Image (cartoon, rainbow, N blue to C red; front, side, top):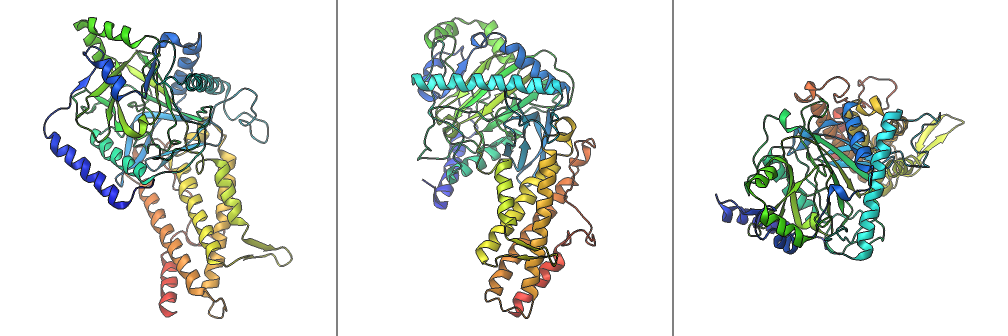
Length: 564
């Protein structure tokens, strides 16, 4: 059910009360060396499952780790300039999105565009000249990540078939969710996302706030999980000068603050591969954030592979001080129950090559953070992202829908609007803004980074810009209708209102993006990564139907409405 505004306010009050109740105290948390660790896992963190490094297929580690290092050495992993509480911040972690061709992943007002993984038998990674979009090294790296993705899809699927709630030996965590599909987002999800933003900002690590899966009722569950993207993250804690302490439990230095993963299909699992390495190739100072970028990325672990819980409990109780110290220097995932200061937190150590799953509704009901170890670390965080509004296919269809209302008279070489129905005009102006601000400016805000190592998006974005220019022409035609004093159009005032709202919104967003492109942080980036304020043109550009600065036009429409 959708939550009301009153319900949202109540949730905020609840959070404030919990913080007040906590005061200066620290909430307890348990690690494998603590008594009761497995019992806590079973009772409060059952959606978490761990597949230990030694249980993966032969040869997979070598392929995946080589792929991650290749992406790093080639400069594909970059810090994102994201938006948190109306201000720009760099993510602490460097990242890249790999996945289905034409897919994107949006977090913290930032849209990442996939480098396609090169699946066997697919031709979607070539342009019209049959040229590969990536060189052979990157193709091999992306293909290795696709093979890991296939393993995760199969592994989670087997878990579903067995119906195991939490694996104990050689099985994974069960999950009831999948497939690519639904795009419902509840108000509760958005509230949790906001809370996550606040907590991640508090952590100072630019972690991603995620919007957890939507609340009940859940979507129809597919029998097959299809992870459609993986967010690759890299962080070297030795290059970071300011890693903040985890504030609620005293778990240690955080690479990624508390958050939910964002923009995922409701109840879908998240699978994470963790690779710690002694000395990664130098690139940029970054910190790791698993899952979603908030620096938004989040990771979650799931226990249940490799060793039975009973065996782990016995081993945990037998660990000496040396083992406890080893725990503190390795990477860990911290978990807590959202809105709860009474249930102890859980800290799960990760050895290099370990994988973990977050399943069931764990991402919605719990939050997780990433606790830094002593060495550099990569993670490959596989997820089922919402694909209803975040794919190239989707936005191309939206462009076609808008342009259907543009009529061209070939004999007179003139253009006109086919329909002046207010509902049609509103839809077109909405699409116009969506194309400009959710796609074109998002793409160019990340500079020329994509074209440097992958050409897949180049032609589609060029065509999208041409379509957008036609929409500018349609807005010009609509303005002419509104300003025509001799028009017999009955709903002229309603049309003028629609136009004014669209232009005002467009003007505000253009200024916001200009400010972001010219921010002090943006100026610190090298030329090939620096934001590009595109599309941009001078107000007297003869090739453009309307000026970039819409102030004068907005004033004209406002004056016209006053006279009506």
